[in-house]
Length: 94
Image (cartoon, rainbow, N blue to C red; front, top):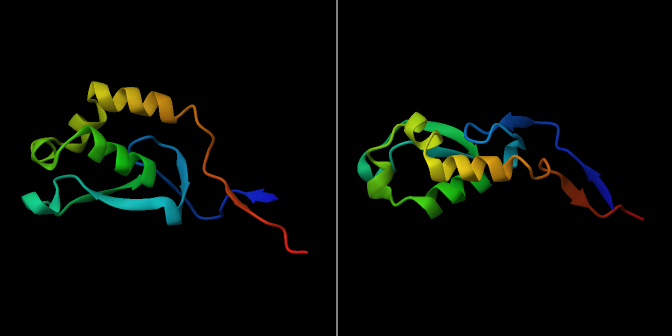
């Protein structure tokens, strides 16, 4: 198997890990359902975790800095930063 880090990397706004562009999503700071328009780029793992930890009604009242400094999020960030950077693995053609 040939593994390589993708060329186009973006830093996740939450965990600060370099992330291949295809694993980055725009996260609405205030949910769209609550009138949010502003976005930040986060890796898919962080985007999913935000929605596991908080409901939209909670996110409506949080700034991105509040979110980033929340104890639950800090625990997540400390955990995810210990994981390998994003790597794409594919089978070598014969």
